[in-house]
Amino acid sequence: MQSVIGRSKDRALIFPYIFRVLPMVEKELSVWRKVAASIPDEELQRQAVASLDKKRFHCQGGSVYALYTPLQGHRMITFIVALQTISDYLDNLCDRVSNADEQSFAVLHGAMKSAVDASVPVDDWYKNYPYREDGSYLDFLVRTSQRVITFLPGYRDVREDILHLVTLYSDLQVFKHLGLSVREEMLIRWFSRHQSLAPDISWWEFAAAAGSTLGVFALAAMAAGGNVSNEETELLLDCYFPWLCGLHILLDYFIDLDEDREHGDLNFVAYYPSPQAMEDGLVRFLDESLSRVEKLPRPAFHSTVIKGLLALYLSDPKAVHPARKKVAQRLLRRGGGETLWLHRVCLRLRRQGVI
Image (cartoon, rainbow, N blue to C red; front, side, top):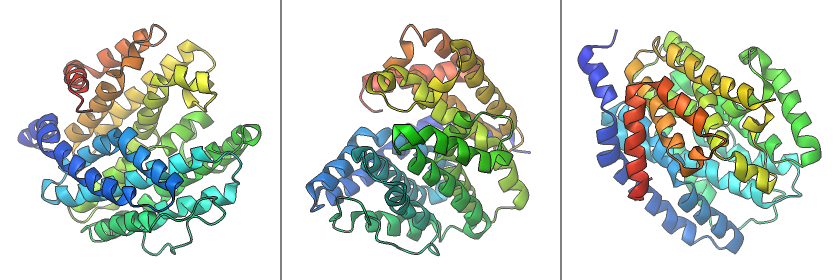
């Protein structure tokens, strides 16, 4: 069992996160902005810079896991920022091209797999992609991620599970960027092949869970502290996939409902058959996540992550839209007093432009 002092420290994550982690993340992002600015191809440069500027909150959020093992904090931030930047950059590249095929997207996302497992062969990532000259930007990101993660003390214990999650993530990205006429059918078929991993949820909820990188960061954070037992990885995955990871991405889609409808973009929350079913689905993922974290070695840490997710996403101005306000308030109340306090903190950080 975790000590009372340990639980108290994990609940106080917000302070070192704001004053130590976030400045380190900004410093790391500034390094990659300089590299991105030197990309020869104008379109690739535009997408790389846009991913760093417009999606920086992904790196900010994921970097909370640098606090799991503080002595490895700087290395973890380097890894998290590199891998998340690959993810966001590739997402932009897939969004940019409307007529690319499944194979070209799959080759691009091979970079994600190579970034977490050096045994995955390096490929010509831009094979069949219309833009190619990135000045080795993607290779630099892959090598940076590899260099950190493969030397974490417990890496061998979590390597297969991390690669599995990254493979699911990559598959999702490939299928969700296909043409509208085949996209949904491919996602449903893909879910049917993996349904045994999460038999009690719908295909769109599974897809949402696969779209989160938090499970990868959580496994890496445990590995940063030393050897990881099979029991520890099983307990963590039982909580994170699909529940905590699903909650993460469902919240993301929840606040983007109107924007995605307007632009005709895929939104997994929109697949719920009714507003009440959507609300019940979000509450279920929250309740399952909060229940399952209590079995983990550091329950207070992971519980704070969940409450931080609620606070971060539901402090977005889009969350107070009349169609979502009631659901957002219910989720915040269900998270408890700590969630409501973190929500106020996030509102203030948004006003200050920190997040």
